[in-house]
Image (cartoon, rainbow, N blue to C red; front, side, top):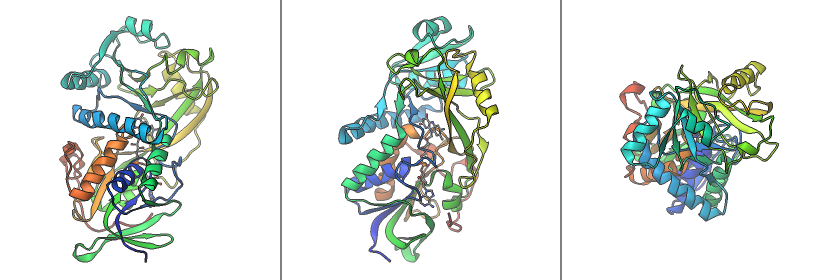
Length: 395
Ligand SMILES: Cc1cc2nc3c(=O)[nH]c(=O)nc-3n(C[C@H](O)[C@H](O)[C@H](O)COP(=O)(O)OP(=O)(O)OC[C@H]3O[C@@H](n4cnc5c(N)ncnc54)[C@H](O)[C@@H]3O)c2cc1C
């Protein structure tokens, strides 16, 4: 048994590394425990790029968090000298009544965010690689772009260490428990046992194991990212010329993609937003079948005909999705004095990473936050669960 810490953070992926950073910066004695190495590729925070945008089609309630997240990403870049965020502009494409276009417009209007509405002809003129149908339009947002997930995690890890956090990698947590009488928590790993006054759990796709007591049904989804090499060269796809895009078809299927940010031979990344298959993080199939590549190429062919050339690589990743696709961010309902949880980011969490770190630090230290997080209540009706103190165990 080691000296007790103020706070233990389980999971040092996107959210946990940010939480450790913010907690250590506020003078807490932090112990972070991670089963893999720093900025690894076996969870949800890898693959070189993540879309960021403010005209949020999912719900306008996310917008104030995004405004703060943008500030914190900029601060992270200043504090570490790393290249993390690139605001290359973004287009949300589809029919005018699609969720992608109508929802983005709603957020933009509600929050007075700068945006432009483009008809199909104007999209083709401004962004010649994109060939929307005549019945499609786009919302263009200048402040959309992408952030680099591995650089973000590395930066938060670096700052957490600089602020005195102890971060232990390759050390899986096997179980945790709340000590009787509000005396904190005990965490068991493969190597040791640790105690602390408070526990923060940021388990990503391992939420069903580490947070079983929340009673929330998370869908763990296997997702594939594809890098295609444009046959005519990457020049038209360079970040200075090419926006990020989210494109919804008439059936509601969304794809999204990025400029070519990995050099002339790195291809440009594209993926389906929500067309995953159920998986388990321990047994996920990381090989990508030819039929999957063909389905992606077929979706791209009419929309971005210059893109689907040779496949450079295809990499799997996991979503941890709640039934309403909103996050879970709160004190643990069954252990409100001792445990804070951040999970269920439902495939759209990365752009929020720094603000989640700030909110987790607020919740862990004060039990409350000034940020608007009512949407992420673990006891909200659509999740239909009941939290129990039992069952928080095992990897
Ligand atoms: C293909 C793909 C594309 C995406 N695109 C976007 C996008 O464009 N924009 C966007 O905003 N979001 C996007 N997301 C979502 C976003 O990346 C995730 O919401 C975010 O990375 C989740 O972070 P996390 O900290 O919850 O999970 P992770 O980063 O996976 O961290 C969880 C950590 O917990 C550790 N852990 C688990 N169990 C244990 C244990 N027992 N002991 C110790 N450590 C443990 C894991 O090893 C892991 O490091 C995408 C996700 C994927 C997969």
